[in-house]
Image 1 (spheres, rainbow, N blue to C red):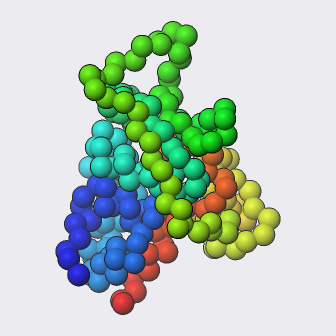
Image 2: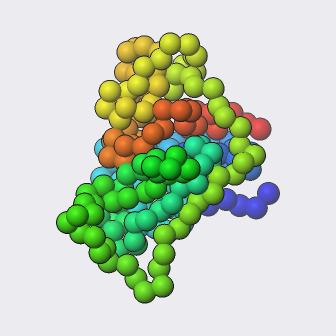
Length: 209
């Protein structure tokens, strides 16, 4: 198995959103200390050197991985209409994902864009919106509690209005892990309530394959 560089932002994003068998095996083969260092870099917003999503907002590979995940998760095309000049806007790469009026896919827009006020955004010569088509082999996941994985009656996190929980106890227990992603998703405001997002715990942390 080829060495996998988890310090690469796009690779780390794949580990967060949609870990493949190859990524899982590589991560599980690391020592506990190495695993902890990777997870801390990804999820601990209290570290002065850690600002995972904002720091990588302008990285094309990072953006590709994130938007491809949404296309696969929604099982519908996602069209990115945000020019590169705006990817790092406000230090966070702010954008929003909205369902198209036709219902045939989603569109990514700047969160602060107002077409009546700013109809002509700065677009590089030759640049055009990019469409991320879904991998149709993906299978839908059952909606479960993001902490204990229980199904049944769930409610959404009141901050991001996305992550599902079965109880306040589970939401509070999950907060240290969910906090960074929660703030990011609250900004995006995407319609991610249809299926759960993969959890870091699902990559088998601490196990040895």
